[in-house]
Length: 214
Image (cartoon, rainbow, N blue to C red; front, top):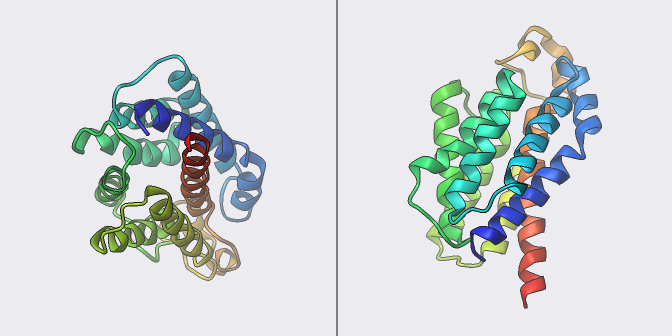
């Protein structure tokens, strides 16, 4: 699967997450301003339009375009965080094929940039609570010699979902949620949910494309 295939995977993934706009808004209304879904959907739809208008010869360029489009369209904290995550592909080796190595390096570098920019860590009730276990799960698979990119994306999606679910019961250290005290304990972090949906989309769309190519 080349850069064109990765563009299709990313497009379909962004569309799937954007379709969860109302669900994410509902989650955010319990702990924030109630607009996380709208904000994320706006950014992703902007990225979708940009991707559809152009062709790309590397996976890196696809990711960078997504990051820049989302940052420009979203604004606020969510826009910056997703922008930082995707644009981190600029610092990675150039990739022309969808491989385990490419996927790992993109998400590893994205996480590193998010940590550096946000100061957040595991347990702070943010999107990093989904990203950190996803990256760790992929790292373990890479070190074990796994070369099946669909399987690696499956374990990443599973780990991200588990990480997101675990934000229920956590106290918040960032955003409006940190002022809500015990109220946030009964709710998952919406940012972690959108991140988990992103990984689920990567897995499902890569799997579908691989099966269609057989």
